[in-house]
Length: 437
Image (cartoon, rainbow, N blue to C red; front, side):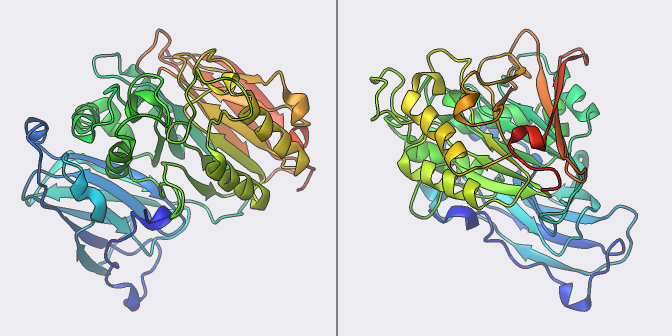
């Protein structure tokens, strides 16, 4: 595994030596991909799918697209209102390990040399022809450590055949990024060829496609898109499932060179996100609830703790598919050692400003964990589940304002009809931080 760098094998963008000027440059790059499709998904690949805007930093953006066999895709982009031409670049992006996955390959393009906090518009053509649904926009991130505002939309649990209106409600919230936490399909298998079918079907739905082409989207799996229901680290074929997952999304990375998994971290302004994998190293739910039972595995937990300890961000968001409390049989609730180790570590190392986000339960809510005394301050848990597979069709938004003397986070639960059922706010000083920290 290449860790955090595995997606970034694309070509350098041309024209930068001429000195790209913010707001005035037009750049273009070419995606090229020849896909060897397995017979299982040949019927699903009659048309291009995407684009999906993935990891966006201050100066770059990673876009994903699926192209039919033999087709060439071209993307052109410019700052909003910009003019002029700064050059082009041509490349083929692929994962060297993808040959082991019968579902074929996807293409990524890494756009470099962008300006921070700038909105870019882009257009994609395939085989020389463009479509309106292949056009989109994105906004680059603020500088790491810069104070400001950030709105995050959190979702999970989406299924073909279920109502899709909540995706339009999400767009109406105008989030800066979208974090989806598992059950992004319900293939219930570790076979990536079957997983491909489910991903492509859902990404062809106009309501979802409109979100992913214009809102930077980050993802983590849960049981139904990792393997069978309630699956864990004993799942047969989990290695192939991970190889497939790496092809389906444009996350900042997956695991480390030493520790496999789908976990990664990234930062926006003064908010850092630790997206943890609660499946690949997980002990079985029904294992004895003793000191041998693990949710993340020791190596991933060490990675998380070191990241939290070293973070200079005012707020730290731990995100996973599994809930801390509300799932009675398939979450941290039945992993007492792992749960208490996390809570006690936050207190021991005086790690402030931590929130936890999850999905899974087909309902959305926000609360303060009943064991918060182990942390030393209210441990806020945000559950956002069932945006397209529940009765409520709800999701959550998190608004961070870090330029204040006492930075705040405001959490809202948005129902499928657009109403806000819950709205709560915490100051950083209430979450173990200090005013002006």
